[in-house]
Length: 237
Ligand code: SF4
Ligand code: FES
Image 1 (cartoon, protein in one colour):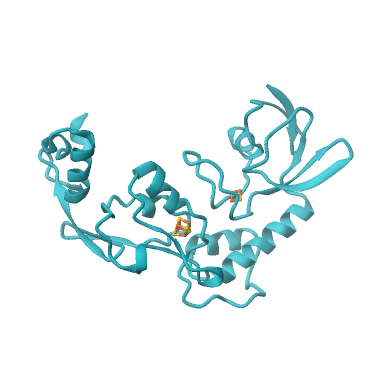
Image 2 (image 1 turned 45 degrees about the vertical axis):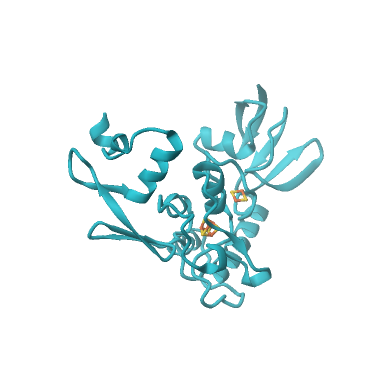
């Protein structure tokens, strides 16, 4: 364990932890977009900036990546930190003017209209890569990726066409911090990445709960009979 202070409060922290983790464990709010506890830090959104001091040295760092160390002093809301955070939010808002999540954050931080030119038609994506990482590492199918360069960079399926690699699980939609990945469900059909997936009705309660295609994929992968997967989580308890 190491001793640190966050906003003047003395805390004991696991020496493997990051500043963000310790702050969160102790109920200290640092805004984030690209951090997801189960996937680890990405360091892409730059919203989680804080000021750290050790000895005579003070620096602005990304708290999701910065490891704690003995004697570290962290300040989460100095004038400089707030200035940078507002600037980052302005940039994010200019990039994703349609994202309700970013709009709400901007209002909370007192950011009104970005001074930068709005990116038109850029939907809501901040290019954090969480969806791609989830699809590849947690689901294990790699149906989506980042393509093109510079300001044209975007997340999507190969050639932005519907792909049979996608199993329709919706993990990318659920993990996306800005609501950028559209998924709809109607009349037993889930639509995502340009494909329609027929949903399985639970054999016990009758509710639709997951795409048939996803359940077949899980059955094959696990070597478990399909019937096992045709009952929803609630009815399996
Ligand atoms: S779609 Fe969402 S999760 Fe994927 S890169 Fe964009 S903001 Fe991140
Ligand atoms: S949460 Fe740290 S950079 Fe996004």
